[in-house]
Structure formats: structure tokens, C-alpha cells
Length: 554
Image (cartoon, rainbow, N blue to C red; front, side, top):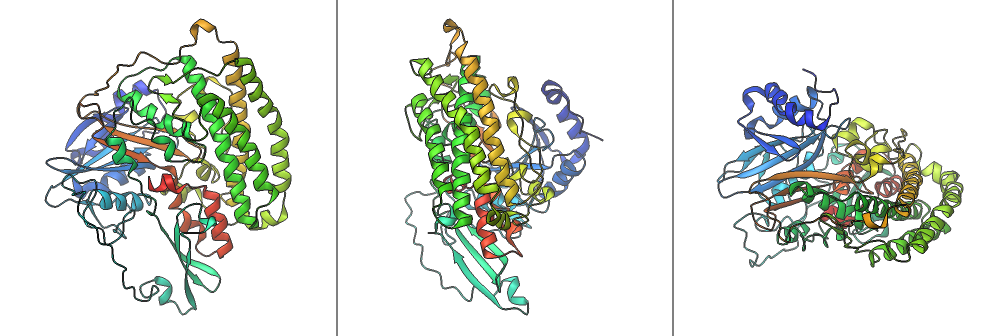
């Protein structure tokens, strides 16, 4: 059976579920209809068999997200699957487990990205995954008592986290079995090259990295729990700005807005879609400018002119965003159904400011290429280092510039259109070098494409009739989606696929709110890129991922 032929969304909704049910046969215990995706309930012991079939025979090669949650009578894991070739084809694999013994088969042998996702599910919810290669906590200390997202978790219980008495850290490491001179070193957590509070536990054989483990969780801020305590319309929207706080606030806000608007059947006026698209691409430019500047900082090792130039151009984008939203970073500009207010007056001055910024960009980008991509030192440090083959990138669920730098032509703005992107002329930047240099080139090329999008949006907004400038649709004051209505939706953020899963319970607050962070999945690829290379290559590879720990930890 082939499910590879593209078809329109309505046809997918009608036929995809029936075709997949036929493919899976008696492994399907029941059907659920999630918004935009058929859902299949399966046994905990059939996870690998079902996922292998969906990956190998139906083409679902992208495990986008894993959501775990607890009900009154069961635990549940949901595997959100897509296709890199066509992300509009989606399926949810629902795995209920016994309340007294929440054990489910691990998906890690099928999708490597399930490693961290299932560790998080175990850490926060308490589901155990049989056959997982390293099932232990990932966000909380090993000594933590209880699982914070379980229904019976006692938030007032004191947590005593003693210093653990460690044996030789190499004792059980595979490098210790080799006849080699190994050394254990720590990179971070308080080091500028780790781009936040990240602790890299590295095993070296001489000067080469033979193993590296990312220790995250220092920054965990319970963003999902805070969202579950807020109302859909008013109280959740300020939080997304704080996930990827590197100028990408509007992109984050759009991820929540897209999920909630589809969940509640809210339309967005065309004018507001254009404004959203323009603001989102300004955020993308600002985020990529900082990514390029800090990457050069990592490679060259000092505050060079490149970093200062990148910050200068980022500030220009920030000034425009401040005019638009009234804020420098925590914008809170989107609203369900549109945006909070129209463009600043006088509009002509605002448009002129944007056009001046766009007019200066080509010369600035040429300067970056002269200083960075044309620099022999940077080329020596980045070409053929941090190599990430496309099949490995897909297995880890890599998206954004990390995936496109490995030749994976995947961009949700084009492949699963939202906003006004499908009405505009622009291209997806893809490089097939699979190395640190390719990821740098992708981000510089994406700045050019974002400028093209913004320019077209300004043309549209300048000519938009004044009496048709509707910034918000008519949204009920209180939103109460139907009980047990579930949705997973994603947008293309500066770092990659930023997705939101929401399960409604008939009230004005989500029963479950899950954030799919692109940085979380992308960071998992670091050992694949770094093992066998040198410590400076490890630093360059980490910088090329452009992670933000606020989004990794959430």
C-alpha cells in the first residue's frame, strides 16, 4: 500500500484514517478523531510494531512530538507523526496504559528523537518506557520525589536534593573499555559557549570527543503548567514570548494562536494575517542576526566586529518591532482572531522605516559574507565539521535551519501554509553540506527571503483600503472548546518546528498543554555531530544549532 501521493487536506481527512486502519489491522483498538489528524488507540506492547509500519510502509518519517498525560482511569502517551515530504498528512498514535502499572513500549528503536521525549514523559508524568536505552529524569534532579504533572503530585512536599556521591565518572562509560587515555571534562553550565545554562558532560580520548551528554533542566520554568492554569483567550498569550526569548516572540505567539484558533474554529481576517506575517519575519531576521553573531563569537573566540555588526542590525529590527508592538522582547501582540492593534501612525513613517531597513540589508549581508563565510579561519573550523546526514537528522526530528542545512527541504510556511505565506513570492533556503558551514549559510539566506516577504507585506498594507483593515475577528469573551477535543498544530519558528498540543475539557482552561520545542529535538543531535571530532568542533557544532535554553527547558 502506498500513501505517498499528495492530496488535498479534505481528501486526507476523509481517507487517510481508513487507509491507515487497514494497514495496522487488529493492532488498532479504537479510533479517535483529533483536529487535523486521525488517532489510533493501540496496546502498550505494540508501539514499535505500529510505528515501524507507519514509518516504513506509510511514509511517516517524522516523530514531531510525544505527549504524556494522566486521566482518572489511565495514563496515555500520544505520538504525533508527520511526513517530511508532506506535513499536512498527520496521525496520532494513542497508547493508554494501566493506572497501577504505567508501562509502555519505547519508540526509541523506531525514532531516535523518542529518547528525550520519553525521558521527559517519565520525568514529569511517570510513564515508564520498556526497552528505552536510558530511562531517567531529564529536567529534574535524579533525586526528585514524584512526578509534577501527575494528578496526585503534592506541590507542598519538601524536596531534599543531596549531593550525590559519584564514583569515577568513567567507570561505566564505553570509552573506559577501550585501551585508550580517556578524560572527563565539563563544559558549562556557566559558560558563554553553551548559549544558556547547559552542562555538557564530555569524554575525551586524547583531544577527540568520544561521548558527550547534554544535561538540561537547570532553567525549567513549568511553562506548560502555567498555561494549563490560564484561560484560552486572555491569560496564555503572554507566556509564549518567554520560550524562545531571542527576539522570536511573535513566532512563539503564532504557535499558540494557530493551535487555539483551530481548536475553537476562529477565523483570522486577511488584513491581520498580513500584519502577522510581516511581524513574524521581522522576528526571524532579528533571531538569525543574533544566531550568526554568536556563532562567529563561538568560532573566533572574542567579541569581533562581526558580533557587533549583527547586534547592530538586530537592533534595527527590534526598533521596528517596538514601534509595532510597544515592547522590545515580550511583545504580547497577537490575540486569538488577529492582533491587538493596527500599525502605528503615521503609517507612512512606519513603512519608510521598514523600507530603509530592507534597503540596507543587502549591503550588510554582503559584508557578513566577506567577514564570515569568506573567512579562511571560519571555513577551516566549520566546513566538514559537525556533519549531520539527512537520515540521522530526520530520525532525531530535526527541523528548521538544522534540517535544511542537511538538505532536508522542509518548511511549514510553505508545506503546511498558514498566515499569508502561500500568497507571497519567496523560496525555502536549503543547503546540502550537512555541516556547520551549511547551517550558517541557511540562516544568512533566510534573512534574504524574510526581507522579500516583509517587502511584499508592506506593499500590500500600503494599498489596503482603510475601511477593510480588520485587525481581529469577533471572538467570544470566554472560550470553552468541547470536552476531550484534541489538537496538535505547529509553525515554522526561527529555530524550527514549534508545535502546541492542547486537550480541552469543556472549561475555559486547557486540560493538557504541551510545547514541542525545536531546540529540544535539535539539541539531541549534538552527540551525532560531535563524536570523533575535537573540542573546538564541539563548540562550533553547538553554536550552529542555535539553541535557547528557555525553550529547551520550557
